[in-house]
Image (cartoon, rainbow, N blue to C red):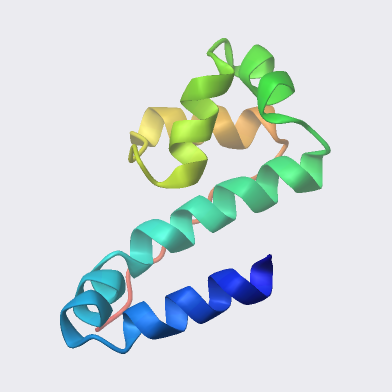
Length: 93
């Protein structure tokens, strides 16, 4: 299945407009990957993490999908619930 998805992604990214739009979302995808990695490291399902944060599994799914950007307050709650330490860095482009 992954092979098929990789093929579709490769075809889509061959188009300049798609490639530009995809690149514009890179930071959001990176944040989503970090959230997923923190949850997995902590050994929680989305539902378990939601319980620890006092929210719903669907809210965690939205955060991890990149469909909803978290507030700083939410990031801090996520970090605490996963026994992580948030690190923010701003680098020159």
